[in-house]
Length: 172
Image (tube, rainbow, N blue to C red; front, top):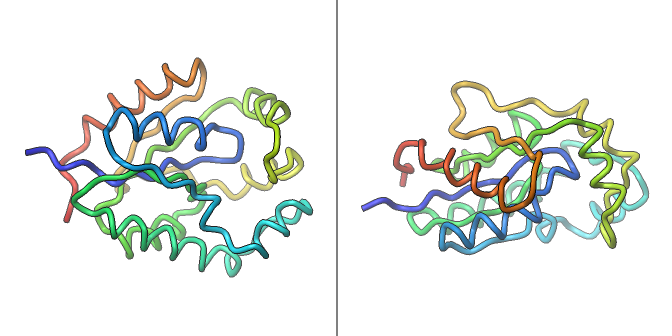
């Protein structure tokens, strides 16, 4: 029996985590959790004001996502989370050892264009440079896959699903 993975859809702002996450969850037949919903109000206020979060700001947010992921171990689930630094992913893995990552990657110009057309999101395009500066891509020893964000949401989701199928059985 193939137990579903708990998947963290990661990447810089504007890569489509909130679009691809629910689509991927639906294809996998598991629940989706929006990572932004785990942020405390102070974090939302900082980002809305154009102030990048510090590692200290991110701690409680990462812990809440890790707790959710651990609660889905053996059941599967998809959650969005930028998880830009290796240390952030390590923190998530310490809470939920079987978690895998789908790193949404793409051309900066494409991502900026998509961000500029978003409505009602608190993350301004001005923070995109800080996101790219912070980004530490997945390393060879991290369970996960990189997926290009060029194309339609359906195409991206299909690429993510196929890439995930190549990963080994999740750790429980």
